[in-house]
Length: 168
Ligand code: URA
Image 1 (cartoon, protein in one colour):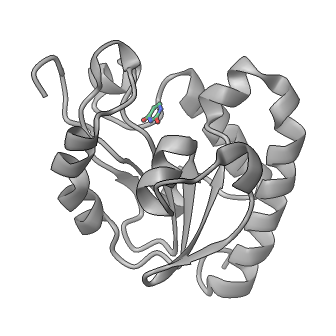
Image 2 (cartoon, rainbow, N blue to C red; image 1 turned 60 degrees about the vertical axis):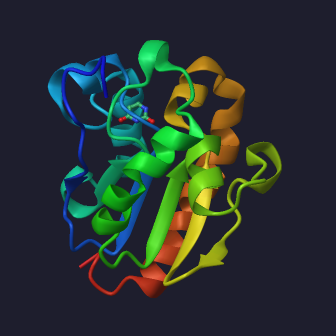
């Protein structure tokens, strides 16, 4: 927390049946106090639009609430320090989408392999969860986008199947 400008909590509809979990705030998020408002956030908005959703219909949060210095991966102790916020954030989503490897390792399983296991559904406690490539990774490497489009289509059909309110 020492170098942060803002604590970045979740946004969106806390009652949503669908939750997205990223890694941690970047520079813009730290300055504005809101998750996914930088370049990766713009791509996340486009991804939501592709499945006929927008930010107001889902809930979006991060594993850690303060920006790690120089955007390094959050340390285990930092993740542990923020975990209670996430558990409080995790009200009752039926589906959780982890954005990238760090979130998938924290939410789905510690040995999660993003290249091999993205797009697969896992049953965790009271929800089903899947991971897709982090939007920042999709900005760096556009060859990953077709696989992500397929994952998003799978997300939309699963959401139509299990979320009663999301597409109403
Ligand atoms: N990357 C993340 O993982 N979270 C944000 O809020 C912004 C960028």
